[in-house]
Image 1 (cartoon, rainbow, N blue to C red):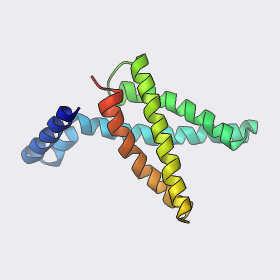
Image 2 (cartoon, one colour):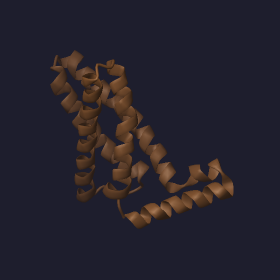
Image 3 (cartoon, helix red, strand yellow):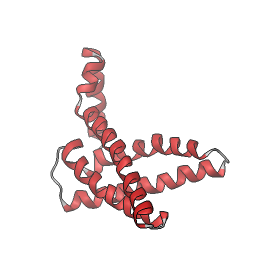
Image 4 (cartoon, rainbow, N blue to C red):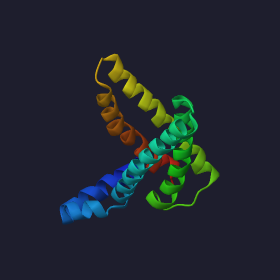
Amino acid sequence: MRAKLRAGIDQTRSAWNRDGVAAILSLPIVKRALRFGTTGVMLTFLHAAVATGLIEGVALNPVAANIIAFIFATLVSYLVNTYWSFSQRPDAGSLVRFVIVALCGLTATACVSGFAEWLGLPYWIGIMGVVVTVPLITFPLHAFWTYRK
């Protein structure tokens, strides 16, 4: 893993020196990161839509609705990220690793938002913290572990 990371850093430095920003954007890891981010935004809306539909449509309690929405969005996220962001085929190993990373993301979400609440900050600061922190944790885990080749 360390060798892959070093090679990626060297490739990025070389591309930057050669062609600047355009070269950086064409790097496979950057393309994956942009696709991963796009998928994350879309699936955040999917989660919210499913949870809202369950709460408003069938009067499910918000905790249960969010758990169901999280599970649904995680499964869709696995498929979209597997095929589109990381250009691979689904398999049992990557699914298990994906779920483990998703649960790490859920744990980080609880910790970051809980810390913001403990500090007495407005809830939206916690949300901003989650939006910035969780992808910085989950993308490298997916790139170098979940979808390792």
